[in-house]
Image (cartoon, rainbow, N blue to C red; front, side, top):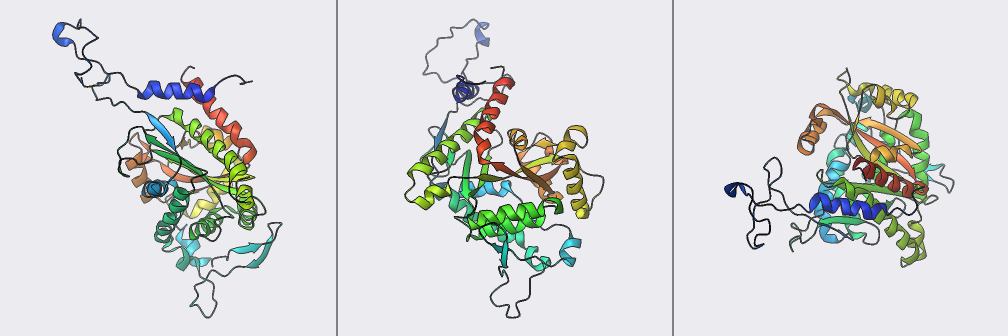
Length: 385
C-alpha cells in the first residue's frame, strides 16, 4: 500500500533538515530588529535553543576501502563482546569440537581444533579455550575489519561531506556490510565467532543454530553475516537509506561480480544478525542462571517479556523492526564490567545502570526489503511525514 511513496527521498530531505542548521545573528544589541540579510562574510556563531554551537553537517555514501580499516575495527569492538560464560560451566564442561558438514548441513566428522603440538590429541577444555578468548577475538576482529574494508562491491560507509584529506579526518560515521560465511570460512574471525555463538546458544536453539551455521560453512546455503554499526549521534533518518544501499550493492554483485562463484556467494538465503539490547538488572548477581533465563525467554517469545516485565531498550531503533521478521532469535548476557564501561562511554542517556545482552537473529533474505521499508515508515510517522 506504499507504492508511489519515495521513502528514501523523504528521509534524505528530513536528514538535511536536521543537519543543515541555519546560522542566526544575535540581534540583541538593536532590540532584535536587525537586518536578517547581513553580509555573509560575517560568520556569526550558530546557536541552538540551549546556547550550544550548531555545526552544519552533510553526509555522503562511499564504498569501503582499505583505509577504513581502523575505523571499522573500532566499531567492531562495540558490535559483539566475546567472553566466557559462567565459571561453573567453564570448569566442568569440555569444549565440543566444531564439525564438518555434508551437503545437507548434517554433522559429518569432527574437525580438530586443538593446537598442532598437542600430540596426545586431547580436547581443549572450555577453561583453556575460552579463558583468553576476548584477547584472541581482539586480534581476530582485526581480520574481520580487513575483510569488511576490502570488500568494495558490497558494503557502504557514511562519511561527513567535505571531510579532511587524511584518513583520520575522513573516518566513517557508520557502515553496513554482508560477509559470506562460506567464502571466509577459513578466517579465524569466522571460526571463532561460530564457536562462540554455538557455545552461547541456549539448549532450546543450539541444534537449529548449529545446523544453520554448518550449512553456512559448507556453502549449502548462502548465509551472510549482516553487520552494521554507527556513531550514536548519527541522524536515524540515514539508517534506512544505509540498508537500501546494501540491497543495491548485493543486487549489483549478483549480476556483475567477476566469477560465477562470487556472483553465487551474494545470492543470500539468509543473514545472521548480531545486535544488542539493554535490560534492568536481574535480581541475582550470578550469571550461572543464564541458561534458565534464556529458556524462560524462549517460552515467552524472544524479548516478549520486555514489553510487559523487565523492560528492555534496543540500542539501535531499527532492531525492533528486524526482530519482527527473524525466524530464530536468542540472547546471552554480557558481563557487568564490559556492560558498564560500554554504556557509560557510548550512552550518556542513562544506560549505565542496565545490563547488556547480545541478541542473535536469523533473517530471511526475502524479508530485507520489507524490513527496510518498515524502518522508513517508522521514522516518517515519528517525524509526522
